[in-house]
Length: 168
Image 1 (cartoon, rainbow, N blue to C red):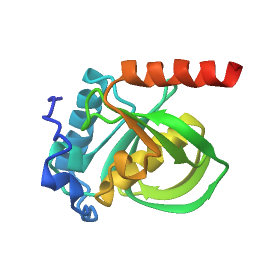
Image 2 (tube, rainbow, N blue to C red):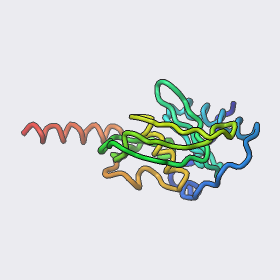
Image 3 (cartoon, rainbow, N blue to C red):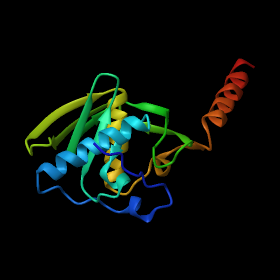
């Protein structure tokens, strides 16, 4: 497993639409291992192929319980609502934004062996799924954000200010 370089927000590659995966071989499995290694090293919750310079419809999502490799995904249904939840991205280090995402996503995708899977993602991993799915279509979370912050410190200041206003 190798750690790959993550492209940053000003890289035009991140705005490209990823191509379907058609070959399920050892190269794909190695890419997935590298992406997992890179994501974990950077303490992320997901990583799309495009973020490491691979223009393929593949991403990884993780929560505290599992890590899932997702290939050629389709979103079948979305429901529920995570309103203005804080979100970050390994391609926008340090920055955070408030993004509305569904609480539940039903998706169809292929696993690393090319087998089709239909699965429901709920809660945090549903949010991560949508974030990574957007990457496949050249969309960054900042495009969907209702508010952006240059750091977690700025976000914390915003929360404290908001709480003070609500108490008045």
